[in-house]
Image 1 (tube, one colour):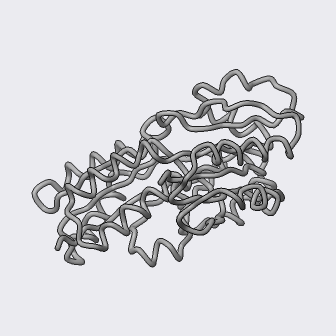
Image 2: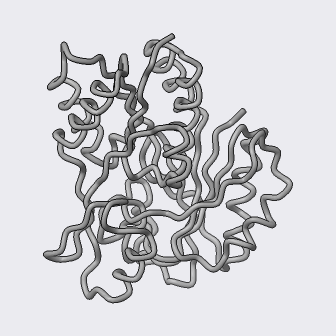
Length: 279
């Protein structure tokens, strides 16, 4: 039986208890507010992040982990007796994180085998993919089998979200096919989804209630689901969305979790959405 360590990055938004249960190594991105830099999940929690967003005159920025940060994760796996490492990385189209993981892989060549998979996802779509692979790794699956399964699942994960403000997305530049949203009046609630790892517009609704219903409908159209997660950044709509998705068939219970600083930097406060893995 193989002993493979699963590594991901902090854009995954995985709850800490899940990370610890599955022994997933999470490599942190950095968050900057002006001249102040913070390490995600280490010295900046989601609550602290949203508080800083309210207090700061400048919008935050994100920076990918250095190759050295990934190399340390690979070396931790080696020192703990692992046979190999599989990385589930934030969408390559959104960040240099994937490239850092690749450079670190090359740096440890000959010491421990490392495979890097572009999740083509973000937030808990990436996180749920990491969970699926980490649970398979616990059965003793080989590095080849884990990589094959991860690549298959990149086509079965999805995410759709409602923005409460366009300011963060516009200034962050991570808009891709959603550029047409710019200049819309703020009463319009834009919906975004990921297509092939790129943020795209998924429609517009005139009220929060209609936007939440539309989010639920998108997830429902992908059912039956293996896993479903509700993610949000300081949103007051969590209970409303939970009710809307209560009828969606999923093998595992709904997981509700905070959107962390990486995704929150670009989505802004009030963002709420659903992430899933199809059955």
